[in-house]
Image (cartoon, rainbow, N blue to C red; front, side, top):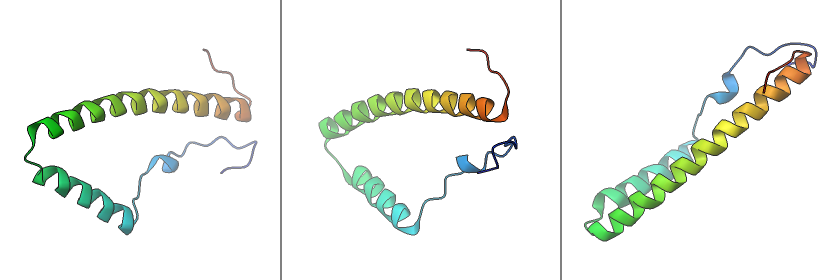
Length: 81
């Protein structure tokens, strides 16, 4: 994190770098989905994932807005609502 009086222009914190363990867990989940032959289970999974994606997108948008506001305050700038 930069010093309080220095404006951050870096978006390095937004780079996602999964650990090897996280990559294996994701791959295992993907293979379970690919191996599933039950259409009802796949349909329920799709519905759950669509709801989760919407919720996470909304949460991420709010979080980025809050981070932007905090950075503006820390740098002494102003941000319109």
